[in-house]
Amino acid sequence: MHKQHKIFEALNRASSYLLDNGREEAAARILLQHTLGISQAGLLASMRDDMDEISFKEFWRGIEQHAKGTPVQHLTGHEIFYGRKFLVNPDVLIPRPETEELVEEALELIAKHIPNPSPSIADIGTGSGIIAITMKQEMPSSKVTGTDISQKALDTARINASELGAEVDFKLGDLLEPLKGQKWDVILSNPPYIAYSEAESMSDSVKDFEPHSALFAEQEGLALYYKMMEDLPDLLNKPGIIGLEIGHLQGEAVEKMMRTAFPQAKIYCKKDINKNDRMVFCINT
Image (cartoon, rainbow, N blue to C red; front, side, top):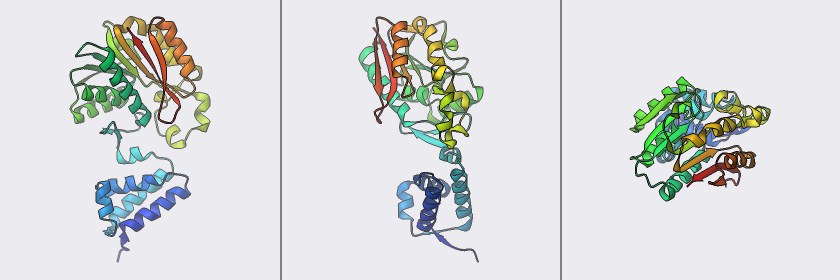
């Protein structure tokens, strides 16, 4: 006779186990919903129900993997970004809430400064395609291109675009290289910006499970910004907008680069919800 588990008992046990292993207990609820295939409301309604042994074993396997560092998103296979569900895997960076703030600010700036009703938008280092696809979904008349140096990342981005019904042109290539030959109204990027010296202080679930090519950059994390500044002036339309996500200590350095590249433009650094420098914007009018 198999031991019966009540759903609320399984959740409590898993939450305590994760807490004891230095992980956030909220992951237990996410993994339980995933295992049972139910919404948060559905989970609340079924707390006193019995959980069959097969489901419990599957759930507990996920809990143990997460306790050892595997990101929850790799166990569920997705993450929510700007209200939409995106496929994620070890080939791409897991979407962060801070990047939603980059998208939000970009949309506001486009509404204010870009008269073109069908703006051309480029997303550099698109990864799973979150920025490119979200911009297309929020601005259906826009023409959006996403670039990445990783073919596997682009494969994931194409699946996401197809699943979400977003028409985005994905191009393989290094940074701005695939954009050459035309001018762009909006250029956005969340490039690798973590200094290699910061690796030791990072969570193992990030360092050991997410692609290093999407996390780290030379020159204390600034290398790719320097590289992009060489080409940005030739690629940006007037009026045009650039929005770059940055590391919380990089605001001053990236602002300075941007002012050198665009001496006449309005440049500013914007903080994220946690009051950290997180984005640098250029309004080229």
